[in-house]
Amino acid sequence: MYKCEDISKKLGEAIDGALKRVDSDVLRMLKVAYEKETNERAKWALAQIIENDEVAERTDSYPCQDTGIAMLMVSVGQDASFDGSLEKALNEGVRIGYRDARKSIAHPLTRLNTKDNTPAVIYYNVVEGNGLEVKFLAKGAGSENMGGVRMLTPSKGKKGIINAVVEIVKEAGANPCPPILLGVGVGGSMDKATLLSKTALLRKCGQPSADEETAELEKDILEAVNALRIGAQGLGGVTTALACAVETAHTHIGMLPVAVTVQCHSVRHTTVKFG
Image 1 (cartoon, rainbow, N blue to C red):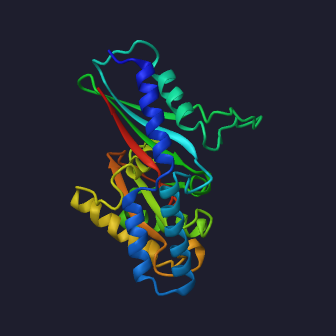
Image 2 (cartoon, one colour; image 1 turned 90 degrees about the vertical axis):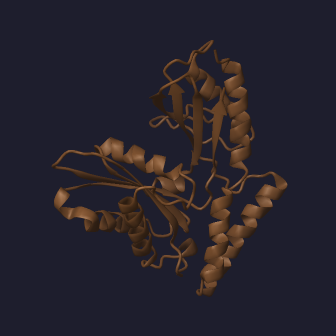
């Protein structure tokens, strides 16, 4: 049996640490982008981003003042048991993790701040066994506001998927603080595609899909997006997006849903396993 108090404590500590460190793979990709950049203004911007992230890690501070909405992807075993409410324990973990961070969660109508960054956005996936795994992603508003969904007809095919992503990124421009990462969901229903686009961002940054056809689509999307030459902080240059991850699901014969979640370069996430 899992103790909810222990879940909250361990999750809170993990979130606190994650919020102060940009994903190491993203930092590596930023350095690669800096080396190949030929636009001087964009190169300068990349240098500032890299220095900021390194200083944040060295001083145990936040690389971005927007510590985002807490997204939790929870895989819970069908045989697992708890000494209380799992959802309450997860939200308490978020409260602990965000104790010193900016609190950004407010009621959608009154705009009153909850002052502890809860409730988190939580999705559950029931699996075999009695395990518990929580994947955390801090999702800032600047990039989240730039996502989008396109309900295509099947005849649009692969080209239509690429065009949809490019259109969304082009409309976003400099708003999501490029260079960005792209999570793309293809298939399912409108809501399923959107969830897939979030799930894609939890994959190891820069890791291609295990499916050969999907990996090829990721490559083609990335090339098309970078051809926009929006560049770092919208200053031009060769790197608008650092990586693109695509997740797919079977869909209706009359639909081709495409969802795009835009993630800024300040990628902060972690995985916590219990038991």
